[in-house]
Image 1 (cartoon, rainbow, N blue to C red):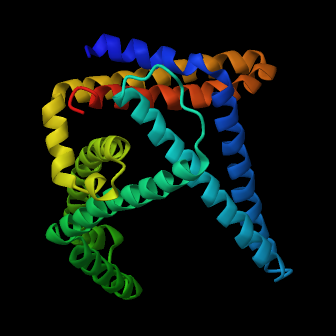
Image 2: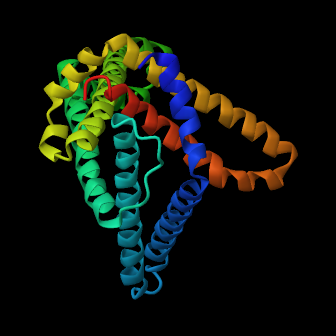
Length: 275
């Protein structure tokens, strides 16, 4: 499909079944309330230890609902891959299973760039430079007690601090690039999960990268950027409106899932080119 067709289809798709939008958002609200309640119960558990159990139950229920919603979004991607115009209904057990798979995919595609970032941090010698700066600060504090000039001491420690800042800046820049790349790979992994139903296929990072090439790197980037820009503009407009008419904020129960469905449908349509 052409880029404009993908965006148009994906944007109109959620409007075909408002009931599913509302159901999805209500479940998301329930999960959020349970998560918040569980966290609060853990805090209050310092006063009443019995609340720890209820807090744990609430957090677990929130996580289970989250897996269900995550799995449902995989089915939205699948509808795009199969060019199905119908907004999928909840298939509770299937959605739950796919949601758990998607949870594993998310962890793996987060851990890999996190580990790579840590490696880069060691290659730029951040730990060593932090220790060096700490030692110099300790020495400087001792010299201050001996009455040495603060300006002189700062000039002495400045090169070490500058070197540390450069290493941190380089690491952050490389980390951003790595995480952006893996966010695209994760998107393809979710499409692979939707298309095959196989966790192993979704975790095949190299094939996910090849899928981006098959679709077209430029096409993937443009579609995802357009989805982000359109969603951001809509949210900005909605936020501006609710500032003047607060009661309209209730519409977020439709707008929020609408944009989520829009994004997932666009991913599915992208992947349909090679499915």
